[in-house]
Length: 423
Image (tube, rainbow, N blue to C red; front, side, top):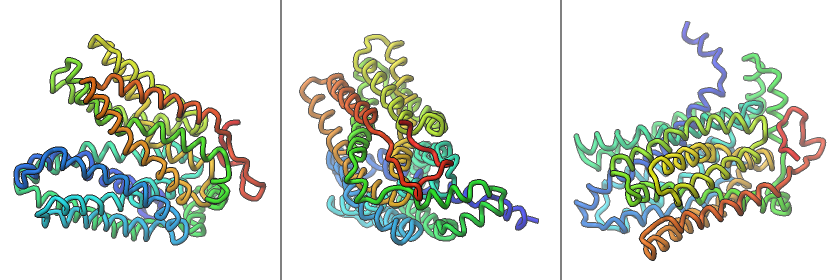
């Protein structure tokens, strides 16, 4: 009885689950759980926090490799790219117990970040866009909520293994999980247009089959996108929006404590923002289907700008919490909207290559935001002014997204059933 029952489950759902886990576990293990290993590594090797944290800067490798990974996924498919990317991440974890020098730590961190594009944003964009053409907004929100899942589950797992065994075994466990997930991805991931259409017909989604086929072929090439002013406006808008990750989120814990919060309350405030992220992703993902992803992103970034401004200027606890709630409401949705904006504007035809170029631009935020925050804090003993600078950057991004307009595809590329950006 189990086999016929499984046969009636739409294959898009297990595919979405695999992408959810790939995205969430990658981020949860590499970033959220990072702090759990800091103490043991400093104790064993005598490294400073600055030396450890420098490995986070290797995230620029993800941006540099993203165009290549995206173009490769357009040409050979996301399944082999996802498999190799998960193995790269796994190797970075499995090799860490062998480290004896600081450069080993940096090298294995580089391997982890090299696998990020093909294990996170690329499969999310490809699989959701192909398997859920009519509901991609809400499904994308659910899939990228994997980041929050990873943030909730991986730090406790790491802490438990480190406490019971060792930091080495924690990394080995992470590596094994990613290897297993890589093989599961090979078995589950499907992106062939004919198989997708057949699956939709078999599971009562015949009305979506034509939409899915058109969606797979619609859109611009990388060359066409680069020649279009909307590409540059959208890149500026999304790069500005992503200053929130390394310029605001990573500094909030310290800012709250410096502003008078007790350490436990400061940690709680950051947890509240993380928890709000799940609901925010789902809400903004659904909203993108109604008001377009571009407009939803403008709202998301506007809420973040208002929230960060309040957080920077608040002189009372209630006002600070109000800023936290406003910021958290807008912050969570951004993770889903980044991909949806690119899909909506440029289609799925060469999504990987175009998304990869957008990620190159995001090196400016991933590298520049922490430098701004650190330099301003060192000179003023406060994050207030750095937050105000980032608010100004948000405003630039909002204006750029407001000026962007939808690309008008040709008759052969478009379908009236496909969602289009608002004029």
